Length: 113
Length: 113
Image 1 (tube, chains in turn orange, red):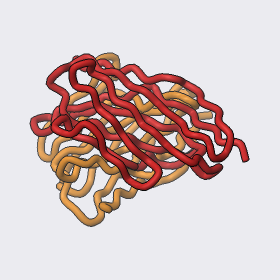
Image 2 (tube, rainbow over the protein chains, first blue to last red):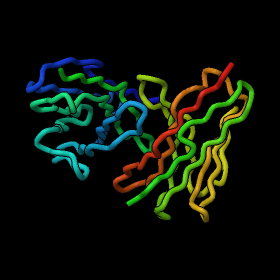
Image 3 (cartoon, rainbow over the protein chains, first blue to last red):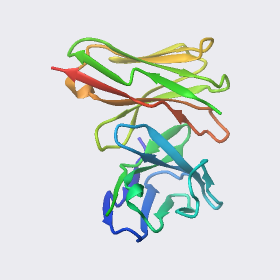
Image 4 (cartoon, rainbow over the protein chains, first blue to last red):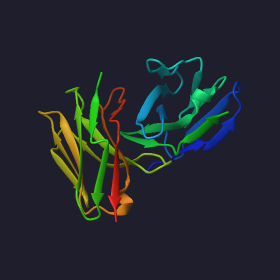
């Protein structure tokens, strides 16, 4: 199946700093990528839909100025958590759509101290 | 928008028993229903999917059934093994167009040896 990578896999940062997470589709072009947030023992919460070359579409309740999404190419989307706070600590997962299937990245565990 | 309900939230079975997870959806336009398996700290992985023009699909020990009239679909795992222990998510979406799946809340399956 198609491969989606995510980097970094784990990051620990101080409160107030910004963190950038990269999501890459390695062997296919993804016009659409999705960013999810997952709390322990909970489902995937869609944060935003990222379309190559255009602005991301954010879900209700997700602050677009805090979670900056850039989809600069057909194989790369980035999520930047700006001025991170402890409540932003979570597991962030991206996915890329290839045909009708959706392929997930391995996730990034963000811990904000 | 689409609303997907998933039950049970936790399912505990003995090795060799069958496990059934049920989901209901609200949008009759949904026509694609994937199931994902997520092991702790790892990415969700597609294990089986079904489209609305099919009532049942089977892949070895895993099967999915779909009742369009009642708007519900189920995952069946037979002869469960300890390695089947994971969180399972159902999803519903409309194939084509924006194709943004809506996920169920997840079922934590525990298979006791």
